[in-house]
Image (cartoon, rainbow over all chains, first blue to last red; front, top):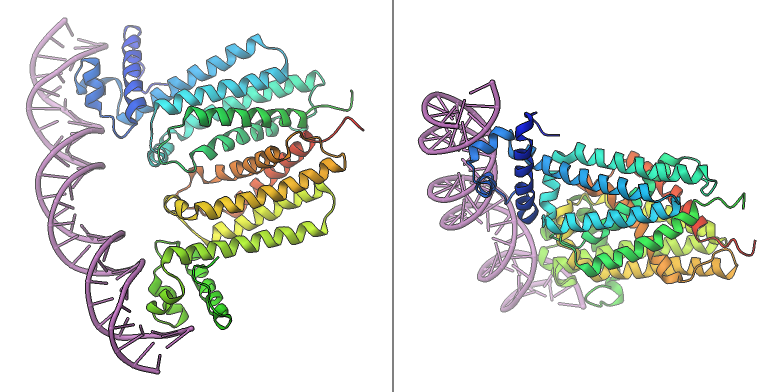
Amino acid sequence: MVYITHSGENLSKINQILKVAQKRFGLYGLQKTTMQEIAFDLGISKASLYYYFPDKEHLFKAVVEMEQDVFIQLIDDTLKENYDPIDMLKKFVKIRLDYFKTFFNLSRLRLEEFKMVRPLLSDTLHQLRQKEAEIVELILLQGVERKKFSISNTRETAILFLELLRGLRGLIFQNKELMYVEQEEYDMLYTKLNLFTDIFIKGIMNYETK
Amino acid sequence: MVYITHSGENLSKINQILKVAQKRFGLYGLQKTTMQEIAFDLGISKASLYYYFPDKEHLFKAVVEMEQDVFIQLIDDTLKENYDPIDMLKKFVKIRLDYFKTFFNLSRLRLEEFKMVRPLLSDTLHQLRQKEAEIVELILLQGVERKKFSISNTRETAILFLELLRGLRGLIFQNKELMYVEQEEYDMLYTKLNLFTDIFIKGIMNYETK
DNA sequence: TGTTTGACTTATTGATTTAATTGGTCAAAT
DNA sequence: ATTTGACCAATTAAATCAATAAGTCAAACA
């Protein structure tokens, strides 16, 4: 994950840096956070920061990757407790929304900046998408196995499902300059997501062996 | 539609202006098109242009409204020939995509500019959304009447369906600076839209009285 | 050897000014 | 009713310069 591999003793230091950086980046975004500020928060010099991370972008990337790991871990843990594919899919939608709620509202990124950052996070975001697709496909496959779902191409369907979720969420930002979302908007989105998920589930249900 | 109501003789002149303006706006967008250029294309002076339209924004708005009228008319005409709700929904999706294909590829707007233009077109776009919602709801209602669909809230479902379409389309622009879309991307989107529409239709189907 | 730092250079950004372009007005002409 | 050249004000684009932040490095330290 991190650019330079460090010895055991300093892993906590890196985590320390990541935590502080996460807070700064979360509050002010990539552009409006300086390396000096992060160093100041840590009580070290800017030069020391560059000992652990080659540049600002790698540090930012490491923070985002850390956040994604937490998200994926949460999904994995929650789905372990569930066994009904339908419930799993619904749970997935909820956890996913909650994650993005905290993620986006912490980082009051301007949409313009998010565009700048995108190429940098391109592969990281791609990996997250892949991981999400795997999770959803797994759920769908379990549904097919138990004769609950009837899906010809589970991979394609999983990706479609995720893109529909993403698309629905994306509509919120269409009129905005800042990426800040009100609670009310999240509630509305959640209602829509549930309505959609119900229809989608019914749309992939197996009615033949009923 | 147009700001000033003119007498019969000059309606063609306004249409003439709209056509020329559409071409210019389509090629270069709102900002990079000057009133002088449009006037030059028409062979009249800039001041004459201001005789027909109070300002640049109203002219632009009139062009967009003209394009929307064409779209709605095409939808209405096509749906008149069809009577199966499922076919109608599929046709709607296709016509809608075709419309936006020509619309977006003509106007190579920068996404940044589109944001600037949005408030100006706010009510116009809202009207189009309303009209689209009416059309889709009508299709759904016909499906319910014929016991083909089972929908508790047709209005809500129609809006959801449209938002899912919009969201899916919106994903294309996420990585772009320019709003130009390759044919290949449209083909992929069309495949996804079809897959989605099939699942959605199955998701609102009535299986009880089968 | 692994870690830290102040002093330094270079690249970006922000503010400011100025010149050029463009949106919009109007009296006069047709 | 329609058209226009001349005009003004507002916006934009380019250029310049100052300030800030990114990133480097030799030396010090543990």
